Length: 390
Image (tube, rainbow, N blue to C red; front, side):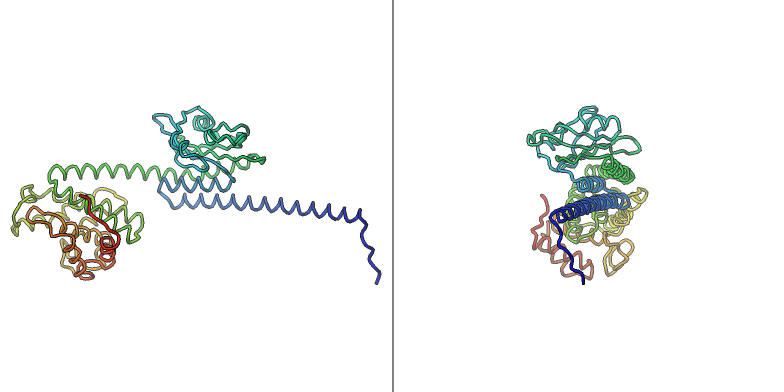
């Protein structure tokens, strides 16, 4: 076998030079691969949120956090535009001082953010630290920024501003990525804004109904508020979905709206009710259902109100439903209603007290009242110190 001659110093230097070059290429390819993977992940997360979320805050959080991660930003903000005042304020922020987040107000046309919001065109900036995100941070002598508009069908609703301080400037590819993410989120933003506006409309309807009850029967109004507090705590303790929590909260706040059909003197009668009077009051779930059924709530509010006096064994009213025939939300509301009613003063009797109320649901756990709801209620009072507000 022919012996292999050792490499000369020059040959070794050449091999090392080539090896270093290959390693540098590999590192650069790896960097680009990781960058592409991060971008793909960011786009995927943005698409996912557009498909599944109707919550405006969730959409903003997902879009902003994905943008910060994908572009390797050191600071940034998502700002919303007040169309009447023509002012941008910070909704989400990263790497910024709290006082800057709280106090920043940018007019249309002012600074990078104001220009992008006014023109609707994205912008890359390389230069001094003069964007709003880095004011007051004197150690930032130079900053690279990308700012893109957030659009809905009605126009600009805000901007995303991303900053980083290093020697690697943002490129047109980065600009396209952030613009694509913002555009992908547009559909979700439309849905979320619509959902917010609809919910505000529902809240307005509820406030009117509550006001009607308050004017006619202050006792029922206070009862509804306390039941709502307990029902909300129960749904949270049980780990129900946001939709279920919101539905129970809405239904609880007006669950006795049907009592507007009962004469005020009957509701405030200081003595025991007659059978006819009690039968009249027992109609309030159906009256409430008929009032609410024509309102297109995104939750089964009318059904919850209709069923909140039903009991697991079929002894309730008005339909004598039993067990799983009663929607879970109504089972939650039923327990909250009983506990508050027994614990509080009634026009015809003194308060029985919270101990008596909790004994009632414990004794009838799984008979009249849902086991899971009762367990959550007992835990709230005995372990977590829940108390009704005075």
